[in-house]
Image (tube, rainbow, N blue to C red):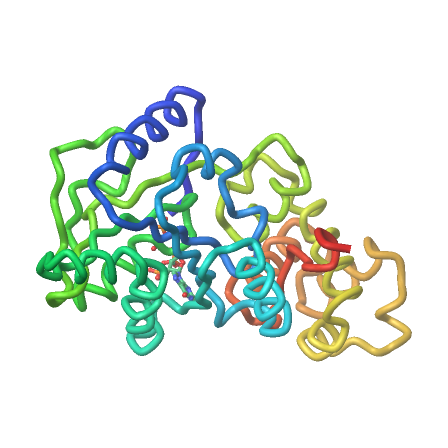
Length: 282
Ligand code: G4P
């Protein structure tokens, strides 16, 4: 799902999420493992405050595993429990409850000492559009959930989805907005499909994509479009032109650009991480 955001929506969504915070023990912050920084909401710390948090790096099946491992370590160094996840995979989703228990270990031990009967952990899923919030709810529930609305502005009291005796989730995930002001973040979000790309020129986006792949994943690019070493090192617009020709699109660069972007999003160009760990930490 892609959402067009307006300031009114943002303020309202933020208010709703803040109001719901008091009902939960823990927040599941869902991020796109291909964008561990760009798919996070910059205001999230302020909204979540001291509430325990589990960071779920979702779509890990599409991300570069080396980068994911480094990002996971980094989150842990920042004091957060982090889990790499594939929300479409039941086995992967089953790791969430044990990870949440780990985050809440102190509280659970205190409750036990005080003789408080254990109850299900109450959680809320939070994240920007398209990170996989509804997919996660559906897979936890084992069925398609008719949510009260996966859209901001729909509040119908607190409805809980129960997952066995161990976990209860607010049935409406908290939708936050990405940080739009930074054009680089915007481009990366568009490349993964998190925001609408009609705001950006497809060919510019495709050229950026080619530059990125050539730098970090040259073999994947070569393999997909059957490029020779010599062809790989042409100027990027020429490379786009060449791929268009190879795919039989003649001089239709718009179509070739669209194809490149779709193939990247669908993982047909292999696994990749756009937010490079080194870029942020070195
Ligand atoms: P949202 O509620 O946060 O907005 O996200 P949503 O669950 O709608 O997921 C957005 C897209 O991401 C969906 O694809 C979904 O299938 C896909 N997705 C979610 N989690 C994962 C994951 O862990 N791995 C992979 N590979 N994909 C994931 P779509 O093409 O928009 O829809 P559909 O083809 O599934 O119908």
